[in-house]
Image 1 (cartoon, helix red, strand yellow):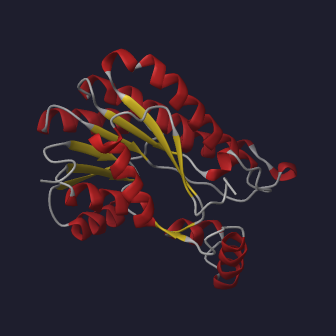
Image 2: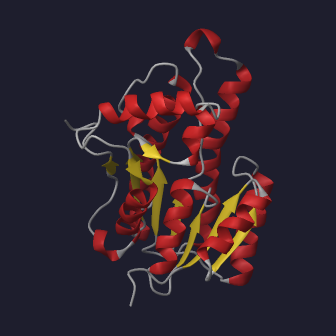
Length: 250
């Protein structure tokens, strides 16, 4: 029997990277998983890669109508939701002198607004004792240059976890944060503009700051999320679990 046997789980941004790796792990541990993504083709590929016990629902977490559609479908098909992994997010390099309203709104809409309303709209489906995991980043603790707006969104995610741990304690709903360090995912291609030379320089620079001396893998984050989603972490609430090869702690 798996650690999530019989559970219904949601992974936003489950069509690639950490989200896809986590959805695969959830299914392997016995859960039925809903995944979301903005691009239907990518979502279809992810569903095929996961293979079974999965439903893909196209949508943008920053669009509240899309969230309403998502949760209406989960309610109709399963009637409840035991695990929420609010994972969808993204960022891009922009220094302070080049911030635009569009950049600010886009980043906060996905990383903060989308996460907040994902959790809020999931609450009616969550039984007492459910688990919520938020995906933040080591940038909640580090001031990486030219990444200021993204850094701030992840600090906001960490703050919400503290508040929600208190607000939901009477329902025994545990809220925790996983904060990845440098992870080798398709997101790196996006933030480096798809330039192989820039990607190599970026990954080399990031790995040089990791005590373990390498980039992490998406599946290593997924294993940590499974821990936070399962009864293995039954006395863990309100924490920020850094999965970063020692980047922050050392």
